[in-house]
Image (cartoon, rainbow, N blue to C red):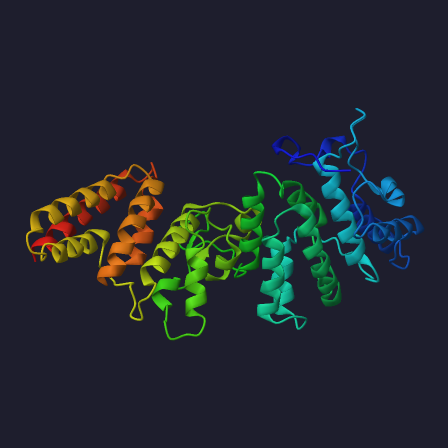
Length: 397
């Protein structure tokens, strides 16, 4: 049987299930024995169900008879030979839970622990090196479909079990139901943000939302002599045109601070969007240069003005080059929103790269953060005025 595709089946039919999911029942069953003063262990029903789950590992959803009784997603009685996405996702979640719980004395279903958080704890344990943990999570995050994702997660479950690390299987089930639908980006962002959580949920001073930047941004610490520098820049360039937080290769290079509860939800904040855009632009700008292209106080206006001034040195082309530069910069300056501003910057940055003209990426990130924020019209006006002034000063100095 095959899974139905499409957004309409992207979420689990939670309201149609008659009882708790098996992983929830197992945790409740174990806790009940403990609360009653008995030896905390699973009942025979749970033990038998776990054996049925292990029979389903590597098997096609809906084909393992012993597993049918442990499903909670109700199949539609419409004669269709295609399984709902939620049923398929539950099949994979059940088999992963069976692998994880096998031989573990305590319940592995741990509410509140997302996959990214579990991998972060795995990295911090002695089970895997940081690089190995990141490879495992990245392999799962780059899976092309749900079946491939389940295969990668099978390997992760064995490692989590060995390290004694639990996982919220209800959350994982919801993630799997979204994997082949339009909500995959949110799942990816949640995993990445959880994995890079500095465990500091306290808001920055004056910021009730808990957002902001706590660590030095990548462009201020970039060192071209580092062995990893080339690979890091390539990873950042791969994020161009993609939604912030959804590029696994970029996850560890982000420094945006965010409250843990926002990370768990995969929230797409203005800070994250601004840093993502700045990182991808910087990577393109820094390419082929050993000296840093992040230059403090060099606003886009200053950089565009320096570029235009260099062009006026061409014999017989001074006026046309100046006019073209002014038109290009004018289009950038009047960008209606952040997306349009980034689009114009993507055209400008390769020219700055070729001319070896730097740009202040910390300043740029600040502008990207507020550019289309309706609550801060004065901030946007101030950036426009400053950049326009910088352009003409650079042109005439």
